[in-house]
Length: 419
Ligand code: NMX
Ligand code: MLT
Image 1: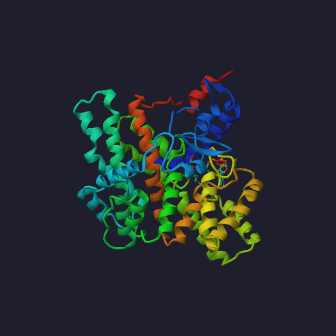
Image 2 (image 1 turned 90 degrees about the vertical axis):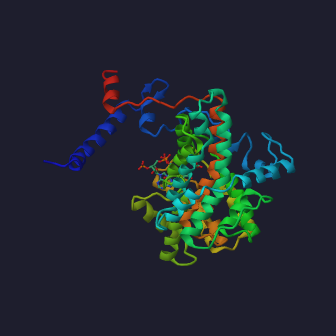
Image 3 (image 1 turned 180 degrees about the vertical axis):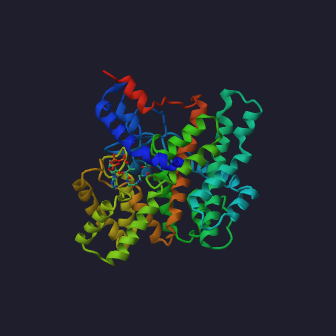
């Protein structure tokens, strides 16, 4: 008799054909406000979520509260949604510094992780464990009224953001060495302190890079895996630590945040195969060999964007200004000239252009942060700002528990029979 796994292996090929046939016959048919293909196709393009912090346009890229990245760069630290004085900016930094320490049991959890456990798994463990001291969970247990949910959510959101540098710094030093964590400086900004905890505070250009990095990675509307996961889990009234821990698990996937690590791995493999200064033809061949092996070219393509990601361009401008002669940056530029044409020729990817992850690793590497499996942790620290802000709004506006309707292929076939 077949084992459960053998039985599945028998069934899968037929079910693949069944889904193909169902999509071919009914895929373009209307199904309520959507078409059947959207149920199978990862809900691409489905208007389904409210997310106030940012909106993504397929051609133009992200706008934060209506502002493009260059506009935000001009305006910070002042922004139209909150126009703080320098004193208020400093007070926010001091508030985060005051909230920044992590409980000793969370330190122990991190210290006990084997250095072979991926930094993202360690990150998610630590963030989830912060739920121990959640103001929201405590207030809920004490019977807080719905109209007040946002207040302890705000406190948790602030604690979450404030504690991330200590978590990231501890993981970094545990995994890669670098000694004891220094203290956060209450009179310095978030990026400086994060750089300090990673051991890079003596490089002002790296601190400036982190300011750019954190801003551009903070939010990318609500439908991406990490943002949507945080919102979904938060909709069950799981507190911000549980919700953002879930976000991190999604960000750790190679088609999402882990792509920044994958890009560096891919570039390094290319370098070791082709040597320094490869010809365009050799790079082209290498890209084709990736596709022919059934792999994706990391850092290229996007589910929504149809043009070069403005976050890529912001990083490219930084590189052109600060590290124009870096050999890895030159390789990234060469790849930028070659990959889109190959992807167009291959004809599958709907967007052949680079996304944010195609550029971030090379900048970090330039300043000596070349531990590539740490890169997604930095993405995660940044993404906390967007997810946490929306969690506050969701609780303030009484967002309900998310519960879309699912269907089986058999149910779809039955529904459209003879239609
Ligand atoms: N290299 C090779 N094939 C690709 C690529 C790529 N970069 N991008 C898309 N495709 C393929 C895709 O795998 C799919 O193939 P199949 O029909 O065999 O399943 C086909 O093209 C159509 O996919 P799209 O509709 O263009 O892309 P989708 O919306 O499904 O996925 C990504 C979007 C971003 C997951 C996809 O472009 C990708 O895998 N890119 C590489 C990984 C990456 O850079 N991810 C980071 C995204 C940004 N972030 O930080 O989250
Ligand atoms: C993101 O920043 O979340 C990525 O670009 C993925 C996305 O928007 O789907």
